[in-house]
Picture 1 (cartoon, rainbow, N blue to C red):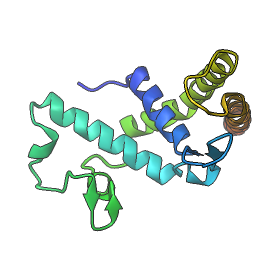
Picture 2: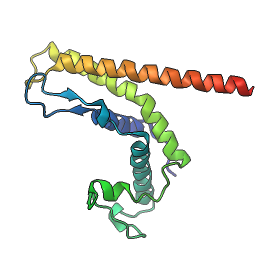
Picture 3: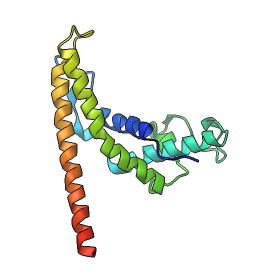
Picture 4: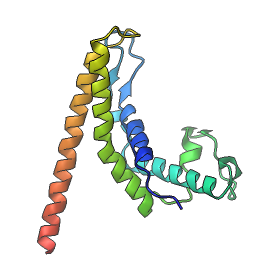
Length: 167
């Protein structure tokens, strides 16, 4: 039975965080922060539902290419890269386990940003293997960490106030 795996939720969180950065910028620091590219809630739910469905199929001994419903499993479809795999999840994006992955990934985004912040600081002070704005990347990641932390604290406060009015 599939259970919430924190290491997987961390990987998913890191994926969502990475969507907010473009690494093909041609000049120093060789990246740009693009917060508008971070997947919205509906997209995050679809990714988590696709993951849970894929794991369930593997647990049942089927490869992802052997779907019983014949749905498109390729990462490319008429709607663009990845659309075929994400638009046909059998598990609904509002399933309880999907919600758990979405919530865990949101909180674990803090860890992903902190890891990349520390990574950049360390490499900025060593002989970097490639030309890259390691310190600038660290600062961008630290800003995102603080932004997400503030959002999580605000949501928690609202939930606490909602529970207080119910009690």
